[in-house]
Image (cartoon, rainbow, N blue to C red; front, side, top):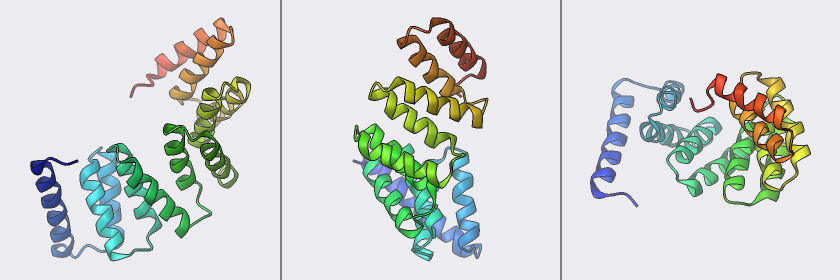
Length: 197
């Protein structure tokens, strides 16, 4: 739970954001853009507040629910993130990113069947989503379905040849399968791309 000081700061930031919005005459798109910029700056708490303000202005803004879900996820508030992904899916069931985000939550809490369903749905809606392919590979890895995981990682890497995290996971799988040269090559590639950034 929040400490008193943290909660006070959170409330104060929310009040300031709403006041700034009205004082500046900010409309929904401008406020949504501000929230996206705050996410880009890794200022998740302020972004969360702004996304909430957008939702107050327009409870049917799917992008605000999706953005707020990401902010909640980065802040470790998994249930709230899950709820907002669900709302984004309800508002636009044809948008793959919300399924991909919810799939990562299912994967994190060990509900692999639901995670696979969501990643499959995300891939069917957007076959160019490297994160959906990676997410499905991660679940397959945890289920020890290494060949399937490798296929998905190969697809993710073909979509983004600089996807260091995919090279890193592929190195782990290749090592488990005894493909030591391939594991070494992928590990070196991941390090060269600096997957920690």
